[in-house]
Length: 192
Length: 192
View 1 (cartoon, one colour):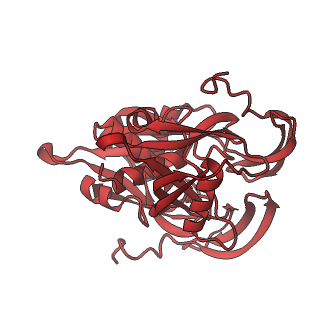
View 2: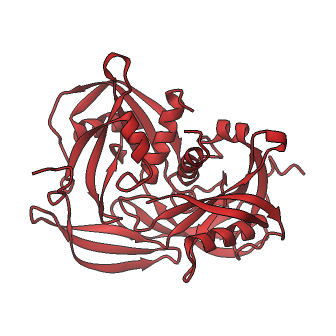
View 3: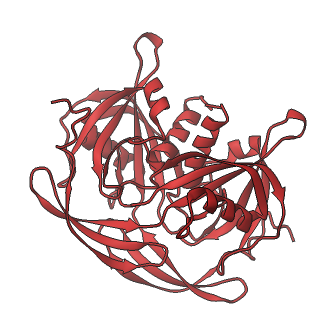
């Protein structure tokens, strides 16, 4: 048996599941599963809608390095102010590209002439059911003031490539979601 | 006022909080906060213990590119088999380095003569309270068979740098936690 392609010894089978708590931004579900050897066990999953992260790249002057728009905001998980790429939830009826364009406009006031998906992953395969899509936004133009959700308060900063490269991965630039987006940016821009 | 250093217009104040659900691997907490303008609103947070991810690097033969140990397992969030670096929860009383050594041994059977923290971030600042630490493990030696948790089933694979670099970011190598760890690896090994 070729274990590269046959995963039957790894895969659990769903028995039943129940929503335990509706947290608004996600629902907590308890799932009973049966292992390949027939053991039953409960697992918990966070059912969240898919997310988008947008990397808004501003062309450098005269062939110089690009800059990026970064949002500075209080984060309710870490209870700290963090600097991250604009991001948000894909609303019902939206596709990822539409959500990326909307979040970019709401959180920065910019529109992009080029908006391209450069990657998607699971934020956390162990217990999150959703995916997060990363978009590269180019050809940016400021067309509006910020249009934030009811409990959103944020500042927008412009950060040049060399500064961002140095600061990423350390507080306040210490979000795994922003780092995975940066990985896709480095690949898409030929830097990996 | 210098908004680069004064975040008082961004920071919410905690009023009270309550545990809503104990999911075992985390607790769900509801927190009421007051905005800088005095608005009250409820937020939800996932209180999880800190995590570690280990990048087990095997030296290449005769100056060649290194290989890595990767675990292949069913993931209960995505309901799919994924390939990720070994990872786990820091147990009570452990420091991150101890957890990294323990998880490496349990999930791969290897010990490392060099185990070095190369970065730490918040997995998700929006609603997760914890941090995830990334360790680079070198000087690997196989000393034991796998010693897995009760409901853990996994295979260990060896993947060479060039294959991993190509496959990372696509299923089944599509975990944001593995990607953020890879960012720190690229930086620590002088490849960024």
